[in-house]
Image (cartoon, rainbow, N blue to C red; front, side, top):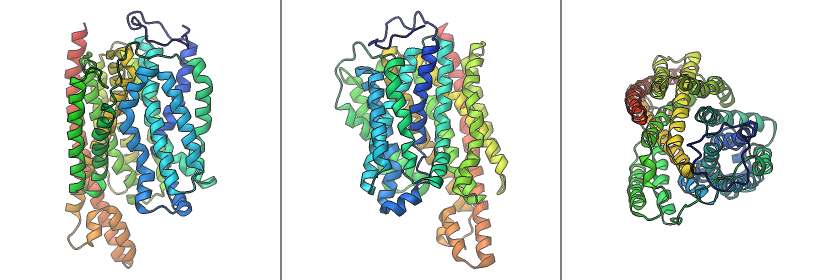
Length: 511
């Protein structure tokens, strides 16, 4: 098959007469994986660069937080807008615009001479990332009309997306160790240049031939709905159920209700309600959120465990955390193979949830010196999550009309953001509650709050007293991690049952 790179609309019959993709489409997929990998890596790319940035730019505490967080907040807030915009103006066009913005912002960030400049550059990186993510999936939906090939391509997409987050921190550590902190941004330039060069040649243009008017009011409503909720949920694990964060989540939910009402009553909504009537789309969206809940809910513990319990340096911890990622690359394609060989999709998704639940079960067995058990748990959990995400993404994108591919993809990715933030908030709060209950009342106030506070307090105490406090705090943190793991396992087992029942009904309804 040879796709016409100048095609401007989604053929109405694309799904009724699927054509197998050829070398051109698979090469184009490889090109699409580059921006996807970099966008996911940029979530964690500042992990080791912070000390050097602080020494060079001297940001205030608030500025340092914004340097970290503004990328993820802008990305999450604009996904819905950019997915809908790509359906209207063309997904390839939006992808190339985003690549240019991402490259320019990377260059600005690399040579930023003030904290304000770096914050602005990170914000533009978030805007570029929000255009790249739904555009890649929307184009993938257009290029791979054969169901089996599309499932394989989406499996690869899911593996790259998941693995990029782990790779970002390691890459930043290696670059900062040998170069200056700006090098963590310069690595984006060759990939974006390659995309801008090859994209117009290899990628087909596709868009909704009758998109309707762009609803500008929905844009600020979506931002007001997404940003306060994501912000509040991400702060709760570290700061507790502070009234300010609860208010933030509540305000976001109120704006979410207004946004939904606007979509249901508007003449040309940003998110068409008909999209949710696609066979299996709503179920995929809900289950994706639950899967992200489990995947990100564990990350908050394993990262701290490697560094604060086992005493690994940040770079050592990042290198060790790469080991579980090795298995991720085979999980997505394996799930696609199982479905192609006749295993019902509902069984594969339920199995994926069960595998992730088994990862949590392993995490519930750890002690204060269980490096390999923690790595095995993280690997098993991630493999199950990729199995689930790849199949649910395929189901959702198959259920969505081709002309709404960008919007459908942005909804799934926004659901992943919400699920991840919710998982960190809920499981993080469980772990914190167990930690505080386990710590003795005689411990210093800061040590009773967090493991980080205990580490700081132990450093100020003499000899054996400090060592005893440290050992107690590490045991308390591990107990909290075990408690959260049990809760995570129960939630994912329930998700496995729900997925098996729901998806079986969906598959029966299709026959």
